[in-house]
Image (cartoon, rainbow, N blue to C red; front, top):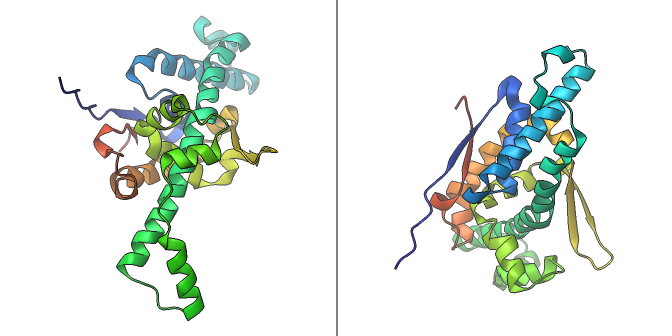
Length: 240
């Protein structure tokens, strides 16, 4: 029996004055692309709301106007944030780093094949040699980028991330200030994010969403043959 194709999911997130909640919703979708994890998305956004209300009270908003369920509870915030951050850092961003590598090499190769650049002879020869190599496979990139390069890692990091690969790649390539990037002594790439910073200063959200749609529709299908735009989750601003 043939498996049913995943229908496109469209998530509309708040923008404008409510962009902090939009940023929280974006991160929740990034962490939990699977439909069975919707309650975890809600828990993450609720934790973000609780933290935002806490900031508002600290800035002078009346505590008496805060509903009981939104009052500050550090344990609830950690319960909402911590598992999601582990998923984003350990699965989505490594997948995005691999996607970015494939994207850069693949687009460079396509551009040169379609219109070779007329350059100095030695430089042209160097480019041709460089592009003669095949774009690295996902398995090879997992081997190079992850300490756990088993089939299980392939499922967790790559297959699970494909519905949000355009989102994570756009996020990763937007600006380095969105995350902290370093290498371990073994040369493995590690990326950390600060959710409170991302939620409280969501100016990154609109350009990342715009770029993500370009990746979803145009660029990722061009260089990653198993990437299906119709199976990816669209995240759009509500005022669109």
